[in-house]
Image (cartoon, rainbow, N blue to C red; front, side, top):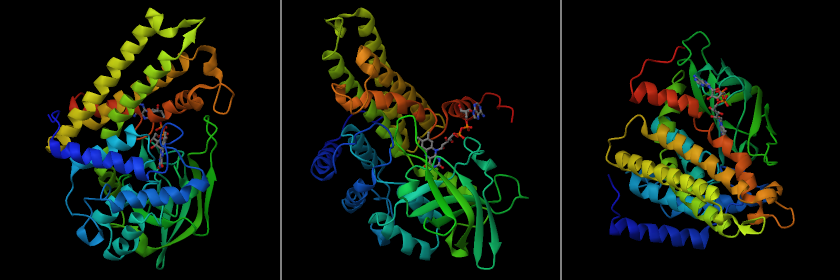
Length: 395
Ligand SMILES: Cc1cc2nc3c(=O)[nH]c(=O)nc-3n(C[C@H](O)[C@H](O)[C@H](O)COP(=O)(O)OP(=O)(O)OC[C@H]3O[C@@H](n4cnc5c(N)ncnc54)[C@H](O)[C@@H]3O)c2cc1C
């Protein structure tokens, strides 16, 4: 397992850290994968482009499109950790996900059109997979795409579309053959979001922000050359691109360590009935328990990173890192609110609110991480069936 740092990686980490300090457009004001305000979009496009230009993103892309043609997972993990540690904005949208699909399955014309625009962040992408009736069971999706001459006509509804309100292009899954078994008959498309019939409606969440959207598709006409991969092969295209997305494993450990530091700072400045909260043995025990779960989650992230780098990844690695992260993250947010006593009822904008209401917002958002990227219950099934080889769930 790679736990001993190398000098070269340490130097690289130092460069990334300085780069973030110099170039990033400020610290993210809220926890989680959040949609920015419209006025922040130009800065976030420039930031995303700067990450690609510096080679901190897209290093594995073909040389013709600005990459090195070789994945360097260790460096990609360092970048993800440093972004999380600094609470810097992630590259905006689902461009990295779409790029993996295009590089592996896209036509030469699609690569030439879209990859440079992803690198320059001229195009923001969103992920149009989930539907009201198809989330965990994504293969049940019912958005239809019918061939009519040189076009597909698309009807249906997507939901949970992060950044849909800012997106230029959607990475869409739709059913092209309703008679085929459900994992076949799905096709992947690149959909221009300004096509007539695309209606993006932001949802207002419990946090008061609008990070996701509903996207209604009504008679949307997409040229047939916007199919990514083969018609009917969208399930493989989607799974392969999701499988390339590994940097989340690294970001998760770093995110929790940062939260633990902030939580200790919050605890040190908190008093209950005039007494420092850290004098209370029950509070100290709760912090100790959380610190233990954070360090376990971080070590699991490091072990998973190491196996990924050495090509010995196990089926349980990503699911377990995600489950442990999201549960420790929820416990941290609950503790961050509890440590403030009655002031935990204040929110962003209230006078005297601590840390600009960061913990209160994080508390409201934290459940999302137990669902996004695979609901924890479903991931537990994955661990049981694919890693522990227990009897399969009844389907
Ligand atoms: C923050 C966030 C951002 C997201 N962004 C996007 C995006 O940009 N694009 C996109 O396409 N999607 C996005 N999603 C959607 C996400 O992928 C889905 O929420 C997820 O797949 C779960 O689907 P669902 O919400 O329909 O819940 P369901 O699948 O309906 O699950 C509801 C509950 O039932 C449980 N459950 C379901 N099946 C089983 C089972 N077999 N065994 C045991 N329990 C089960 C689940 O664990 C969950 O508790 C996002 C979600 C979140 C939270």
